[in-house]
Length: 255
Image 1: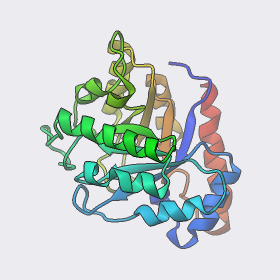
Image 2: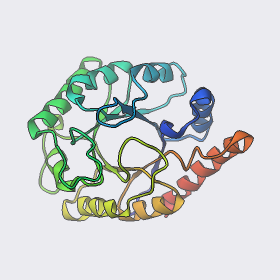
Image 3: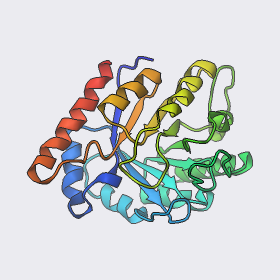
């Protein structure tokens, strides 16, 4: 699938936390599309990191940053409003109740729970007169069919309250950076595009570098989340490398 513009999204999970302000300014100078923040609660994943306060602080930078919050948390319905209140522009939550790394059968939220979470987010954004996009994420071992009921596809044109704006396909297991890309997840992307005629935004997260990005775009991905590949340099070399890696990924827009 060819797209005129592929979105490049640096993930702060791999940034230098002691120099976070500088690194955010650096990537903003590259006119990146948005920044990706992984929110982990220590239950859905083993790790526990960023929260709502970081989003508030980023909004104070006045860099016109679009902030995407990826909620890797066990009970998103009860927490999703907090991140909208904090100022996130995009909020993504999982169909899974827990990570269950490596297991073929995932413990999933019920359709009712997911619809209620979507509706709750839409209502909160409407009250704040804030445009917030909502995404649904699936882990590598979760079948793509689990998200079909929450997207507009083919002849299905559900009301906006019942559908999400994007699908995030995890190409590594959630919770840690610098993992190897799981190529088999690209079958899900192709299935969404070809079998379900999904024309919305498909995002991929995990193990994205120049080569895997090309494969993902070819399959039909429109948004690339990349952490370790962008933030992998050291010292002064790191600063130059951040710009170089972003530009390499952006060059794939014509791929």
